[in-house]
Image (tube, rainbow, N blue to C red; front, side):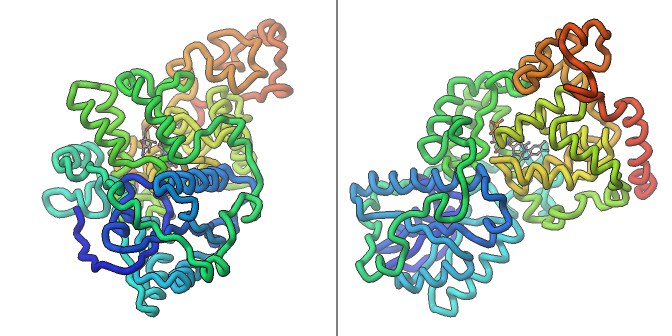
Amino acid sequence: MHKHTIDNFQSGLVWFRRDLRLQDQHALFLALKHCAQVYCVFVFDTDILNPLPRQDRRVEFIQASLVNLDEHLKKFTQSSEVRLITLHGSAVQEIPSVAELLEVQAVFTNHDDEPSSLKRDSTIRGKLAAKGVSYFDFKDHVIFERSEVLNQTGKPYGVFTPYKNAWLKKVTELDLQSFDIRPYKAKFATLKPAQLKRLPAQMHGLEDIGFELTNLKELGVHTGIDGGEFLFKDFLKRMDLYNETRDFPSVKGPSYLGVHLRFGTVSIRELARTALERSRAGSAGAAVWLSELIWRDFYAQILHHHPRVVTKAFKPEYDNIQWEDDKAAKKLFAAWCEGQTGFPIVDAAMRQINSSGYMHNRLRMVVASFLVKDLGIDWRWGEAYFAKHLIDFDLSSNNGGWQWASSSGCDAQPYFRIFNPTSQSERFDPKGIFIYRYLPELKGLGLPTLHTPWLAEPMELLGAGLQLGKNYPHPIVDHAKARERTLMRYSVVKATKS
Ligand SMILES: Cc1cc2nc3c(=O)[nH]c(=O)nc-3n(C[C@H](O)[C@H](O)[C@H](O)COP(=O)(O)OP(=O)(O)OC[C@H]3O[C@@H](n4cnc5c(N)ncnc54)[C@H](O)[C@@H]3O)c2cc1C
């Protein structure tokens, strides 16, 4: 697994990014192995942070997770002097300058394959090289990355099932092994007085980087290494049932580990190892959950091989589609964002993301399909909205999910498959538990009309204290007509193909 030839150094710096943990952290492990002294740093990168709103659940998640990482560092080394250094500035400047200040000979970090991150890292690598500092980066975020899983003709897979089969065939114990840092406790460096003077005296709080608290704590979101461990342990009790429960948003079925995978407060190797072992022991739930982790690898390698998907349809002919983008479309989009479409399942889902930064996977598919195929709006608008609001936002999976829903992606659903929001609602929230939770204004409405308030009898509406258009919207679109329009809209795809 360790393909790099790494010299031994007097001192090295580990730059934490989407790997905010101590155990089983590839770059940290190799830095400890190859350096006599290791410093740890995280940069609150202003290039990323400046455009964000001042309240952002992700920034708060990161900050809280760094505090937890620092606590673990102190506990692990049994030293209050060992600390995680946090910096606030552009990483392109901060990393070379802190490397100089600490007089390290090498910087160790883990791959981040988003196009803008690759560009940043290559600039930093160059700046470090100019100062004679080595730069090493490693795979840590996924089990297989880049070109590690290719088809028999040496090309990347564009279809999931053969990719998954190849993934399962390739995976060995070695790929899932943890990087154990226990032997290296004494190698964490403490700062010298002269260095201390030139570094921030303590870790940055949220306000120090210009951000404010969100409702993250109220929501009970578990942060940091401790949070990830808690959620994974909790999920272990229900992993075997995942295949049966995962599609019902009112049921505690999934793991809620997305944000922890995003920021690396859990190890993908530990998760995949556990799922594979249980799946081999016959657990259908574990097998399906492992598949989801493999989807994550799949989309990451798609982004690596086809970085154009960030702005373009994976299947180019889908960029010939004419999306609605006039004033009326903007109004429809605003109604979708606010959870005011008149379709309870869509509205409940949008209110979930708006109030918590999370949305259940089934509902991500439902609302994405609704935006693209009922409202005729470009999937990129929805993708951007999710990117802004999802606490577990990951470029590759989000883009993959949206291109899947809009049929423009690799292995996407066919364009003529159009989710019916009402039947999705009846099927996946049959008792309306999820809808009632997020749409209290519909609490007086019984079943089955809860799924279709526009079909309620006037007396029923009156009894429920509902006035459509007043305290709950009329449906903003007629699904049957929208379906016809979508088939027309997508006909350009057929035309360009033939
Ligand atoms: C339109 C759309 C947008 C999405 N955007 C994102 C995103 O920005 N970030 C993100 O991590 N996932 C995204 N997903 C995938 C999926 O919805 C979430 O990963 C999942 O809901 C997170 O909840 P969980 O951690 O409880 O998942 P679980 O069901 O417990 O799954 C475990 C993990 O597997 C991975 N995973 C699960 N499903 C998928 C999938 N379809 N594709 C890729 N990875 C998957 C995630 O890392 C997830 O945390 C998107 C899906 C759709 C349809």
